[in-house]
Structures are given as structure tokens and as C-alpha cells.
Length: 397
Ligand SMILES: Cc1cc2nc3c(=O)[nH]c(=O)nc-3n(C[C@H](O)[C@H](O)[C@H](O)COP(=O)(O)O)c2cc1C
Image 1 (tube, helix red, strand yellow):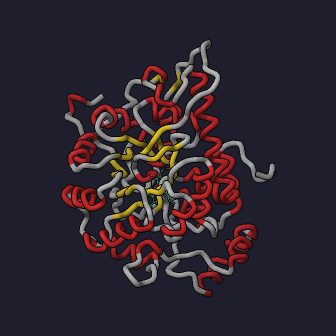
Image 2: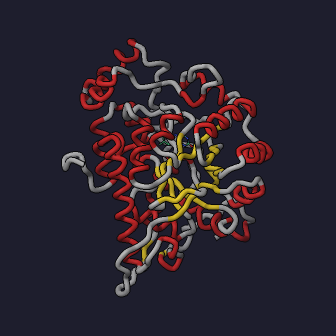
């Protein structure tokens, strides 16, 4: 990557994203529910955890590879599904190419801007993410399309409460990108010529349709009509989750689990993986950081299903901390979106490289040969750090 677009940390990518994107597009990336307490805790909690390094005996080469839902990945970091972004005209296809180039897998949001078939062509290690939207028939149709396209796993996200209050103001997502909208947004966009130019070159405005929500033979609906349908769909029961798991038949992740009792129910429903997640602080504000909830969940079900974590990962050492507390791998959200905004596909590769080198140096400092050797002994965990949610009060730590 050219020296002037390369960045050394995710924080620098974030600053570049802020400079390059129109205000409302950047706001949509950093937005979090209500006061943003959960989003902030997701990030800050990592700095409460310390390391217990060794001084002699590091191995020369370290193995960062692992598997998630049956896919070999070269580092324990995968792309978390994110929807409704107008960050880059190549969007999820650029992200998929970057993940493939760096040997890792990708979750594709059902609210993505690109059709699943195009994204899988760029990275066959693709897990398709669905929301509970439209009821069983519509969900089955979407899932069968994903199967036919070649998706190797399914991610089901249920942690969404339609809470749109954000103290710093909700970024308004327009109904459609017609001339009126473009003119209304132009004062913001005009100050971001790089972003405007990228879209101008494609002769297409940002896509506000969701092609992966299309019913058979129909075009992808506009984002707001899909969102409206979602709001009016009765939320799923555990029987619905078990039904979908059965229908899919392959690797299946429930994303958004924060409590031990829910993790156990997910195991009973037959899932193969869970992600300890609070939707990046976008759901119920006041939920603790995911890294605080992880240890109890990993203790309870880590020997039965793959336990992942997402939320607040900004550097390789965060990944190492999550793995030391029981995660098999992590998923990243905003970090790669900022990379995408900063430098397109190369920016996402840059973010994955930052993760890789950070994980590698932490492993070296801890004297481990492989990520699978990480354990609690590697960390300094302050008292009161862990939040064991969904266990009888006497078991609270
Ligand atoms: C802009 C944005 C859009 C998102 N869209 C989705 C989505 O469509 N489906 C989903 O399961 N999670 C979605 N998420 C949540 C992410 O998958 C992930 O849980 C979260 O971003 C992790 O936190 P982090 O951003 O601190 O890494 C979204 C997050 C962001 C920031």
C-alpha cells in the first residue's frame, strides 16, 4: 500500500475515516444506543486487563491459525457482519477480497449493499447473517438462497430492540438516494471530495436497497421497507432458533449472547457457535462490555460450542485478551469499516495486518508458540472485572 494511505493503528484509521466520510456516514459508524455507555465499556474494559509476560524462552515463530465453524483461518479475527453503510462503492466485495487476501472468513449482513453471490465470488469463506425478519417462510427462502450461493455457515443475530435514541443525535438514513437527497446531503459531501469522487466514478449513488432481502424474482427492497417488515415480525422463540438450525443443517452461530442461561439454551437449540456480543453497543445501553461477560459464558459452554466475542476490538492485544479469557476467535466491526473508509480494500487488509502483528507480539511477550496456548494465567484480571450474567446470584463474581 502506498505510504500515504498506510496507517499504523486502528485509531489512525478512525481519524482518517472521520476526515474522509460525510458527517452522517461517519456518524452511522460510531453511533451507539442512548448514552453510549455500552459502546464505551466495550473498548475501555480491555485496558483494565493486564498481561503477565515472560522474559526468556519466547519461540521464534508463532502460530496464529485456528478454525471457526469449520473454516481454516490464518489469524483468529474474522469480519463481523455490518449493514447499511455507504463507506465505499465496492463495500462488502472490497471487504471480502481483503479478508480472502489475509486468509480469513467473513460474516455478510443480510442488510449488506452487495448481493451474496458477488461477495462469495470474492471470498468463499462466507457466513451469511440473518435477522428474524418476515417469518419462517421468508427466512427459509433467504437461507436457501445463501446455501445455493455457497455460504459455509449461518449467523443469526437476534439482539436488536429497535431502540433508536442516541444522545448525540441519530444519523438520518435517507429513504432513497434520489436527486433531492443528493442535493440535501451535498453540503456535507462537498467537503469530502475523495468520497464523492469514488462514488462519482461508479456513476451510482450509495445503494440504499438490501439485495439479500429480495423475495424470489423481485429486486432487493429499499432499506426502510425491510426494516419496517422486521419491526412487525414477531420476535423468535427458542423453538424458532432450533427450527432454523435444523433447516440450515450446517455450521450455525447465534450472535449476541451475553448471559450464561441463554448460552446454555443456545447449546440446547443445537447451535455450533455463539458470539458474546452486544451489537457493538448498538442494542440495550447499560449492557456490560462483552469482554466482562465472556469468562462465565466460556466456562459454562466453551467445551460444547465455539465461543467467539465481538465488541471493542481495536488492537491485536485485545484479541489475545479475549482468547486468554476463553474465546476461540473474535469478530471485528468498526475497525474494518474505518479501514475501508480510509483506504478501501487495502485499508481493510491494513487493519487485519495490525491485528496480526499485535497478536504476534503479545504471544511473543507471553512466551507462547500458538494462540491455542493462551490461558487465564497470562492475564491480570482485576477483582470485580467479570460480570457473570444469567447465573444464580450466589455464583456472581
Ligand atoms: C455500522 C454498523 C452496522 C452493523 N450492522 C450489523 C448487521 O447488519 N448485522 C449484525 O449482526 N451486526 C451488525 N453490527 C454489529 C457488528 O456485527 C458487531 O457486533 C459490532 O460492530 C462489534 O463491535 P465493534 O464495532 O466495536 O467491533 C453492526 C455494527 C455497526 C457499527
